[in-house]
Length: 112
Image (cartoon, rainbow, N blue to C red):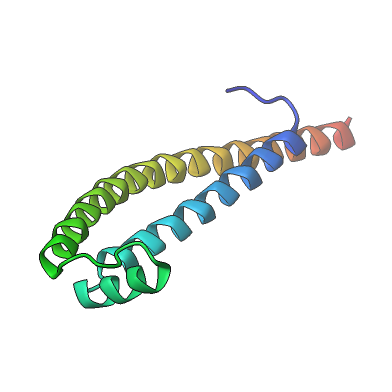
């Protein structure tokens, strides 16, 4: 993507950094959920009113299904994180390139 204005490049970089922070928060949250024990999950679900009256076997099955779904989401989020990291690197390079170009133009104008 070609963005002519340095200000627009910086705003794009800021937006990408914001996306990166959001993805990091999601990955952290999913990782914590993945590490949650069955007993803790049963306690949390009972307080929330979702697993009331279920046997431990049923809770274990639901917990395992959740764990598998969370693992899939975590892999997907990590792929998105890698993609955003690449985009951020590209944006930073573009901003640095634009600033160097502007600086060289400014020094060229002063010499003339």
